[in-house]
Image (cartoon, rainbow, N blue to C red):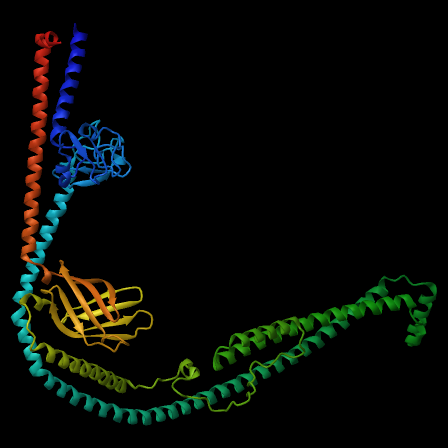
Length: 590
């Protein structure tokens, strides 16, 4: 019994949904655009294709078969290749969708109407982002209008400032010209005085340098003489050491011969000769020693003497090297540290002396030979590196001249700015403009593009600057506002071949700050730039935005109520069906 009730319930639900869909279809054609609804009203049960090519039975509309060449008979199915489906998306934004996306299993319309299988209505959720963006835009617009009010409040002060500057700028120019004349005269006088002082300073530095050079040379000569004396003393000491060594070696040789003779066993003949020599007091009577013994003794004696002599020579060379090194250090302290090349040469000389390759150590200092073009007097000019590198060099003090030169340059820049200001306020003093534009007085903006940068200052001038070379071309002077304050115009710029003089139009729109972008050249030598400013904001636009917000909130409320009503009706229908099934009424009807 329970199973049969379930089957009956499903059957009744299907019939109910089918009848509901049929009733809805009789009022609204699925996928039809609002401006085409009247074309989908049947005439004698017939439908005519929009292009008039065919007339078909009305029940063939949206039957999932394409009958009309223009696809107008299937706005709610994917049967026709070029069909268009309309998403109503109540509460959000309507949308046109290619019919190829209809019934493809993906919910493309937020109200779910593109899928018969049923999609959740998410239009209210999607509308929250739109609602938040609109609210942020309203808040920004209100802030911009507040800034515009501040601009308008400053208008009286801006106009008064222009009048005062127009009246006073001539006096400022005259005072600056007088100041510049004085500074120019002071500069010329100081240049002459400074040049005299500079020459005297050069002479003084040259004299001091010559004195320091003489002192260094004298110290070097003295150090050289002391080193030579030390070297001579070392040589004499080495010779004395060598003689003493040779004497000691000879004595040791004689003692060795005596010992060798004592150790030698006399023959009978030798003993006889010795006794004869003693009796006759004639050493020759003893006779010559054996040849081999004499040769051996002589060789031993010479070898010993040579060893002593070599040791003495070695000690002497080492002593000379030490004396030379100390003398060289003394000279270097006097004449300054050597260059890298000099150090390398000195190291080579030290190595040669230590190895005993040189018979005599080199002098610790030698005056380099002058090259071609060299003179005894150095170049003591201010830019001479050798002067600046000299630790004793005293730089020339020209700070007073530098200060006056800087002040004169500053006065020249100020005079140029004042003359430019005079031209500007002469154009601005008679200007008439809306109070809100006062905040833009002399405010400058830039729009940077790949090749050029476009610069303009409201109520003043405009120019085009080459990003590569920096060349600046005039795009004209301020002419005023046009098109209800939506464009600011500059004209009368530099010459343009076969076209009017260069000009610039600034297309203004409401924004929270001043900025420029998107420069272009709509016509030859006629340029355009977009810019935003609070001064361009209008209260009417704020009211329009607020009305849009009110409508959006009303649509959301209506949609929520509609969805709630549909859900309540669906629950009521289900309750009736359940009652019928439980009471058996449905079974009797079947």
